[in-house]
Structure formats: structure tokens, C-alpha cells
Amino acid sequence: MDFKKETWENSGHGKFQERVERERSLLQNWSSTAKGESLVRAGIREGMSEGDKNPREL
Image 1 (tube, rainbow, N blue to C red):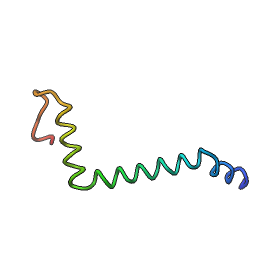
Image 2 (cartoon, helix red, strand yellow; image 1 turned 180 degrees about the vertical axis):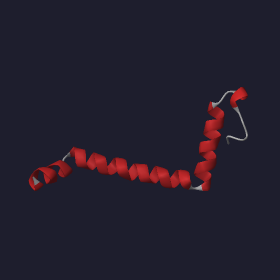
Image 3 (cartoon, one colour; image 1 turned 45 degrees about the vertical axis):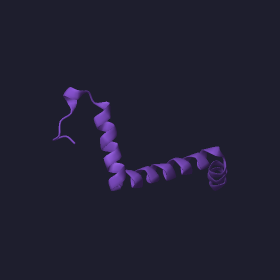
Image 4 (tube, one colour; image 1 turned 60 degrees about the vertical axis):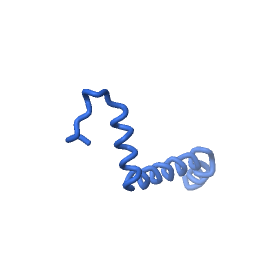
């Protein structure tokens, strides 16, 4: 059982999972900063049509 787990973690799957989790935490850290937040909001605003822009939502 432990041997299988070790093999799995040393294979591509384990490495890939580590990378996914590291990138996800980096993204969360980035979007929680003020600059990231404003860029995300700007991106959301750009993605909307003129009629959809509602100041209360942003």
C-alpha cells in the first residue's frame, strides 16, 4: 500500500498535483491583493456589455 502511494507520488501524477495546488495558492494570494482585485474587477467590467455595468455589483 505505502509502496504504491510512493510510486504514485514519484510519478507524473503526484508532481502534477503538487504543481496544481501550488499554482492555485499563488493565484489565491495574487487575487487577494488590492492590485489583483482591481485587475479582476477591470476584467469583469470589460467582459460586460454597456448595459450590464452596474456600479452596485462592482
